Amino acid sequence: MACFFRRKIAAKLGRTLQQSEDVFIPALSAVPVFRKQQSPDFKLSINTLRSSGVLPSSGDTQQQSEELANRLKQDSVVEDISAGNGVINFKVNRKLLVEKMLEPFGKEDDHKFGLNSELFKTLKKGTTLVEYSSPNIAKKFHAGHLRSTIIGNFIANLKQSLGNNVIRMNYLGDWGMQFGLLGAGFGKFGCQEKLKQNPLQHLFEVYVQVNKEAEHNEDTMQAARDFFRQLEQHESEAVSLWQQFREITVDEYQRVYKRLNVHFDIYSGESFHQHGAQEVVQQLQSRGLLKTSETGVGVVDTSTGGDMSSVCAVQRADGTTLYITRDLAAAIDRKEKYNFDEMIYVTDKGQANHFNQLFHVLRALGHSWADRCEHVPFGLVRGMSTRSGEVVFLEDVLNEARNRMLHNMSQSKTTKEMDDPEDTAEKVGISALIVQDFKGPLHSDYKFDWDRMLQAQGDTGVFLQYTHARLCSLIRSNEGVGGFIFDPSLLLEPTSIIVLQHLLRYDEVLYQSSQDLQPKHLVNFLLKLCHLVASAHRELPVKGSSQDVAQARLRLFSGACSVLAGGMRILGITPVDKM
Image (cartoon, rainbow, N blue to C red; front, top):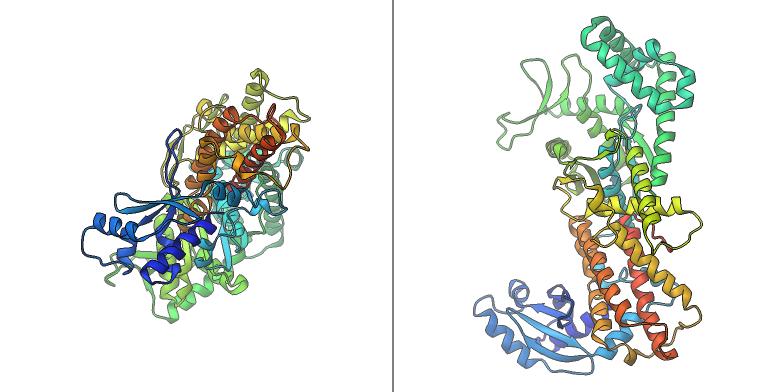
């Protein structure tokens, strides 16, 4: 394990500089590897030691590097120490590297590799509430909601893997004027029989029809307002129809979520917080924070200078509340109910100002925990369409990914015979969607590209799945060869060492992801692991080797397979073992 070596090097530094070894842990990092190029295993940043006061902040960093490197002595763990450009490089004993890195594999908890690292001891553990996906009721799951769903799922998985108690919440758009339109429209264009046959498709058609009519027909608009007023006044007929729409939609969404391997602990929604939103307005009023604009709108001053140059509207002129008012009520209610230590909202970057205002008003109300609320923004996906044209629904995208993958697999000469090719194609297709989405910074827009996404040889989800399936096949075909005991001296080839050096970085990559909540670090780590494993697979054959050599190589490949599968699951990808 990386922490064994990190701790040994830190202890050496502590003795030499007469400091606690803990101060050196943040300054030590595993060195990224490059194929066909030997590199040290760890590096120590001199600048980090200067900024933390361990070394003088003045003077030449290179000279400090060289002087400290000369004071450090080699031992049975560290076999080479050298000064680099503002760093000190450490190369650990090769046999010990193999032994310690592969030691955890073959045990029952090998899937926890890297997750018990001391790097995570500094992270605050507690209850994390993640709000994600959050589509609108009575509308089919739009492809635009894909990003929020898979990013939120990754964040929830990561937090849970690192020991947090995670609450996964889906905050549905289940209130507002669209229900007035839908209620009025259903009375005119709706059909209970069609609703049973294809619920969301029928509701979508009704919504489109009534919207079109409301544009030029004031009577339809008035009927919509009347229906929504009945809903707000809890008139039984209106509420019953609304509940039917909500239940149907959640059932349909759950079917799509199951395909994505996504689940939620709580399905909440705006409708839960109508009363709470009015209470928020009263609290703002009693604290003197609620002002009335010239148009009669209730606003809160969010400007830094208190000059009303920036305001947040919380109440319409007619006294009804707004989306942000219900969000304020929802946040306060969640804190009371779940006592979270942090709350993370995952939505597109267009809502950044909404969340800045939300957190500002919460703080103004005296809720200091608003500082522990965070908005994770993401960019737009351009050009997401299927063969039949511009896409509307996520299910169309999932079907297309599965069908294209099924076609690619049927054309490939390397495809293995499998029990359920459609299920495999579905899992691999979804992997491709996730990896294409996660490779870059979340806030960036990106262009959707079916052909590039489904390539087996590029940096794609297909390549991750192919590598995992290949490793599973290798392990299956050599059942009985592996064992808990292996000889580390039989894995000293550069190809083996470079895989192990890469695995040294795994806990650092997870730590980095936990800091900025970006999946790109983990995706790129796993893709590189797959490339290194492909080289090792070519150069280190198991078949035809002696029993001892085969056993050692199998341990290496089993370890890589375990880390790959664990990382994929954190990303929200279900690994396949045949492909």
